[in-house]
Length: 391
Image (cartoon, rainbow, N blue to C red; front, side):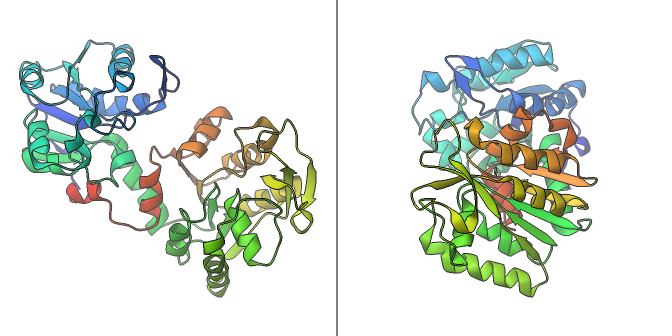
């Protein structure tokens, strides 16, 4: 496996593709978790006597140079975390950037400007890929969050360097998720929440031969409940997926997989409501109200399902947790997962944010940095960035 610790780095320039796409408000970084997660890879490279060139995207500028999406604040934060100067390039390609990279000495760091300021990045343009590759001898992909994208800095660049490998962060992602997919300890519980059934059906289907139990919560549970003939008031339902939802549950049961849905809920007429209208069994949801969180009976049920689990993979909150009035179901689930005596893997931006808010990061075995890539990995799809490394 082409991993970072297998590559000779001394005296070389190393280009690392990271995911430093962090939330920035008026130049201030609101959450630096992705930056801090990348630091071990940088320190390993620098400690091996190499020069370091870092590249990343920020937001969706669509090929235009948008100053509000500059990586300059990231350079400042990296300088603090690494305890050494981080030079900021004016662009990610071009003669000036090439000269800055060529001039780097071992132990020095250069951060390139936002890759997506150039349309060639998302188009996997061969010339853009060549220019990126010309900046270093070794390429390291440490950006699990974009390995599902066939972009120049993820795929094309690998053809223009002497060697390419996975960084420490990407290695952890592949190993932890691979363990859950290929050789999990049982009972294995999959927890799927969030808004859309459409983004999770592929995972449920792919893991039916691997998991022992499935918990479904959040707005996506509404579609499964409707498939059983339960009325869910004015809650969001993906009408075109009702038949598929029912088929998924039937297939699960035929394979001996236990399938758990909420049994009670908190409702309100508005997602911004200051407090719930009440707690109702799912059969009694008021016609004019929507389901916004799981209820106390469901929390007790889900906690019991997780009690003896040895592997848990969780993606998606149990309700509209951004509103404190409807956050208790998600917080309660996080606390239940944290108590599991086994491998616990959390993925997805909302779920990641929830675990950090609850202060339970250290209680989870692994928190994935991926969103779409996390979902596609669990679906069993071939991810372009991982394929490009030969993994």
